[in-house]
Image (cartoon, rainbow, N blue to C red; front, side, top):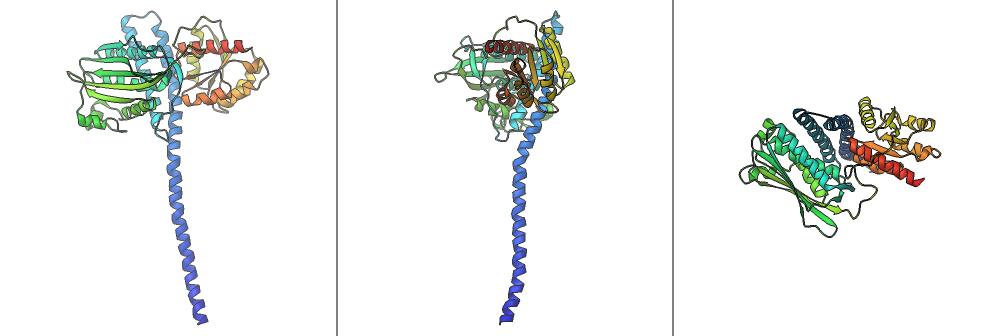
Length: 414
């Protein structure tokens, strides 16, 4: 009996070990799959963020040069061409924002809280709509309520991205007739303002069934839309996310007489007073003396653009292509301000700012303006010591205002 027992134990023991190994392997496989599934969205988000940064660098140039052209002596035909270039570049910039937001791990856009002039943003969107409509031979009507609040706090970058998508669709889906933009205030709670942006067109129109499909990611109203007009079907899904992130929503309804009206509703905080951090475009910057600016930018195209803008503004620029060289150059020369790109080939903009701030006065106290294609870099840039921050594409007006405010703030601190 003892021999039989030992024999049974010998037979059972290997089976248990093999079973244990199989169970261990089975558990390991799902674990690796889950880890890969969790990592995938982060990889996609990082890749799209890098893509957006690289795209916004040439877009900064296109917008900057077109803005400069718009202020020169042009004929009516040439001015329409410039407006079309600007509208296209602005739309590309908004698409970059939408795609990065759509790739975020949690599916919701990160919100910023910046002070900006609502009427200026609304006028800019109206001008963009008028330019695109004129290029296609359509009529355009823009109505901005006189009751709109002047200064508000919210996310102007993503609000503009959402509106750019709506006006682009309005023009794209309209072959005859016209398009319209109406911006009106709606009731808000206490220190909040509800704003409704209504974008209408006399285009192809939508059925109730098609409206139901509109806000699904990568979905078009019907199968003929993509083949006839193009598009990935991502825009309206992202616009809805943006609207909800800003305390609102988006509604769509058939337009009387044909066409469609999209109404984007957002909630913005009312600004109590104008502060030193007033946004670019809120008012014309006061004249300022010529500055010597150190620009840390590795992209050759970006250098040409920044040099053009700074020269037109009356400043002198010197460029270095690596973050590690910024502090060294600062210690050697007399500069009035630094433009620091956040994405650099060696140490990166954050560490470069920290190295400059570690220098002895006066070099360590120089005004620094962070520049990036990603608005999410702002918090880290300011924490490292940046006085101001600009999101690409950077306009001449925005750069002029940032330089003025940063140098004034630095002067007041000394």
